[in-house]
Length: 119
Image 1 (spheres, one colour):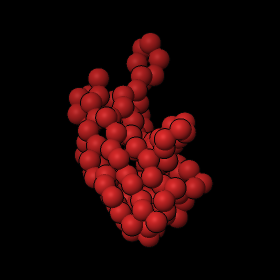
Image 2 (tube, rainbow, N blue to C red):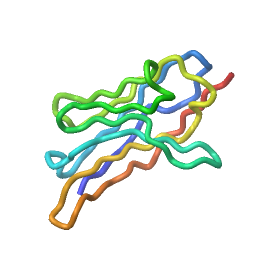
Image 3 (cartoon, rainbow, N blue to C red):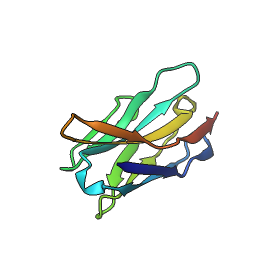
Image 4 (cartoon, rainbow, N blue to C red):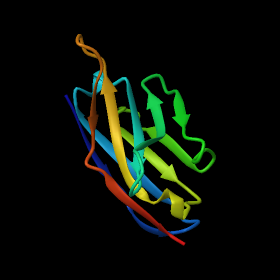
């Protein structure tokens, strides 16, 4: 099992920056990928950015060029640097990790951290 704890959310004005962190514990050596998702009120949860164990990155079109996902050398922490924030980036941001098992892939989610961007 993998446990995830997010931090770094908050209130920021449009055009500002925030950096989210997600610390993983447990069997982190088995993690296949880690990513950030977000869910705004009344909307479905959506992928923001993800990074695989091999370092490949994937971004939602809406955040390309503004957000950067990275991870620590120990691969136990993943970060989301968010620049040029917009009001539409307001959401609860969740960290997710997945790993393979003999019964198929499993995943784990963090508790979420609120990001609010004021106009």
